[in-house]
Image (cartoon, rainbow, N blue to C red; front, side, top):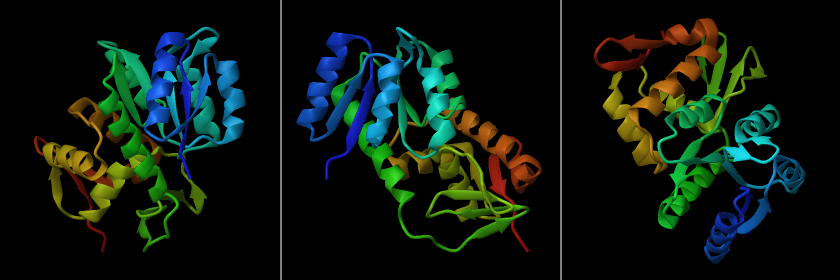
Length: 227
């Protein structure tokens, strides 16, 4: 079965070129040139969203927030203009999984899409042993984080980071190691700034249990060893 991509882009020429390239790669594509049409397209349950920032009836940030209220796992890739670092950070802060800068290279776009789709499929695999820490339960293979039995709203990016830390419990991982591991295992671009954003969001969502992730000053991070 083909994966379906929702392309939210109001630049008609760019959208048509991107749609053609994606279809040639084997994807089904739903094109929406506005937020109104994008909301309607969600009923088709796409497997991934390519989302422009500026749209005629609003912005992609608002749409991203709406999607994340209902679905924490569908991959969202922002399409952002070169040099708009603020947009990139804001997009990651509100729940986007990745970004591609315009004008983007088709091969890079395909690589980002494929990597994010693979991550999303991990959520559908069978569960493995639960990692209990504080009031949280984490299922690494399912990418599920629970707080006192209730699901915590986390993006796959945040859960990927938590998974790396949990799988190396008691071991100090340098920032460089985390960057390499996240890149090597997920085949997507993660830079130092992105890592900081993921870590900040994850700690905020863990609340008092954020103390389980220790900062080793000047080196990196360690998930505290459980007794």
